Length: 318
Image (cartoon, rainbow, N blue to C red; front, top):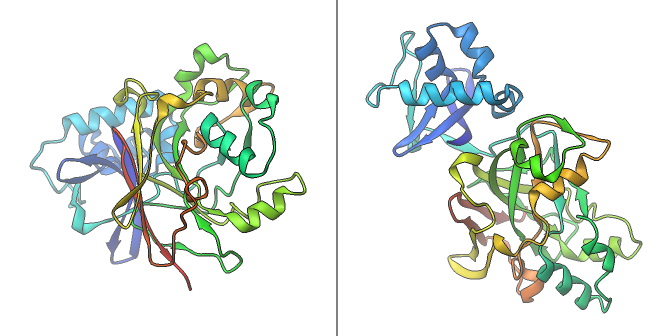
């Protein structure tokens, strides 16, 4: 399944709903479950109208969502109470798939990108990077989705994109061995870890952060592709384009640290929860800093990852 969060304009204003991506648009999963189960209260419990609610429901909710999609007649657009079951793309607007994420932790998993960063600072590659997967916590309350504008912050002159793969957690767990960790991944999406490079460089000199250089926005989307749809998450082509011109290309096979190892490390005497997001860190050449090329106000950034889709954002300076 490809699960999205979308907004539809109603007489009460724009309302947020959980959708399943179809060939010609989006299925409202909660209303589809009402149609199939014949009971709204039961449908609300099993297939809530938000992705976080669905993840909290675990595999039982995922299975009911699959049944609802499979059981819904292809030509049925309205339910028994005249609720809309299917929307065309021009009737909705997509938002980040998990707007109420519980956390966003971004790792440093691609060796080529990490080495470049230390080389630019004239520092040696730390041996500790090879000993455990390092991460930082960023602003999970500031997520934007595809085709949403990203604000150029007033405090930076060096705006940058970062091309990353992300995993979404679908089960609560603690002290999880890497061999079992794949069971805790609900699905995958694209992450654009927007960066204010000049501020980041200054704050990192005091050996703390990144903080202000990152926390103001992250792009996540366009949807979450469930784990069963991607046979090998470590063989995905990754591309970044600016105004249609290719700037970056890499592959998830180059991840030194896998998501399973990240989960093992994160969950050591700590708990991970449904709705946590884990970023891979930037693929080699996957940002302007590595290329010494810089996006400008008005530019459109497209990040594409094989089997997932395209995350697209326009940079806007107020």
